[in-house]
Image (cartoon, rainbow, N blue to C red; front, top):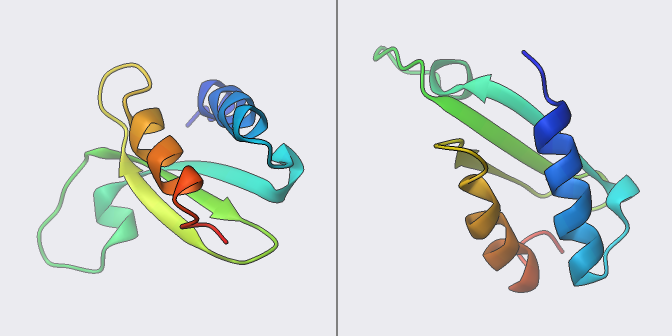
Length: 81
């Protein structure tokens, strides 16, 4: 699964807030791979990790780059510190 569009968007968002984009990674997966449950979901998820603090959050991918708004809110609120 290609992660390049998400990686590019992540780098721009992180730089706009003033963080080093090298500290963050992104992974695209499906909800059923993220959660260990009996219900299967093929919903696309974007997982963002701060490689320094090990904090991570998962966002539903949605249309285009809808996950970016939620990521930016979390980033500016200090959720990845």
